[in-house]
Structure formats: structure tokens, C-alpha cells
Image (cartoon, rainbow, N blue to C red; front, top):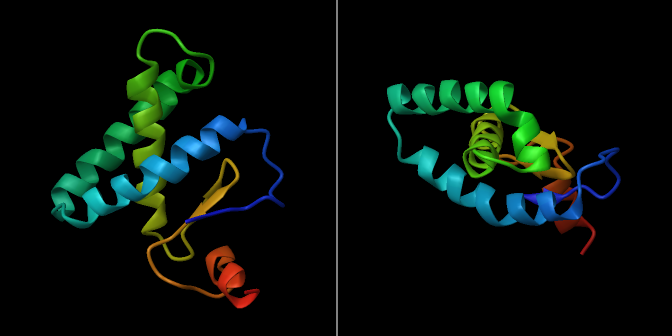
Length: 108
């Protein structure tokens, strides 16, 4: 997982810091799940984001659960071909063409 500083996001830096710390844990957790458990987490994340995304952004009752839902949703998307780029970060579970993580390594 890497920051994508050239992305056109309006996400506050604190969101990126949160995701850089928490998203790898969510991905590791998903690796150990059965397909049925993975699907349950996917559905729960979708519901949290759809129902409480505003709370995640602005705070209030349920903001912790909403933020966890966003991180888990992004972790689910990290398993998709090409991973996911959102909120100024890129996450994927395997190297792929155009991966910002690979580009970072290539520029060293």
C-alpha cells in the first residue's frame, strides 16, 4: 500500500494516515476468512458506507464503525484485479501493471 500524492483527492491527510495504518490489518484479516465470511464483510462494509459515510467524514455517533467499514471495504477492493486507489492511497494484494507500489520501488 502506498500514498498516491498525484491523485485528485480531497481527503484529509488524517484519512490517509488512518488507512495506511489500518488497511493492511484489514487485508491480513480478510486473507484468513472463508469466502462466506469475506462476502459478509463485503456486504457489511457496503451498508456502513452507504448508510453512515457522512458520519465517517464529519464525526458523530457511529463514526468509528463507519470508518472501519470504509477501511474494510477498501480492503475487499484490494483483492480485485488492479487493487483500489481511493482517498489518496493505493492498495492491492499482488503486483500489477501500473501499480504505484511497483513504481515507487522502480524509482529507488
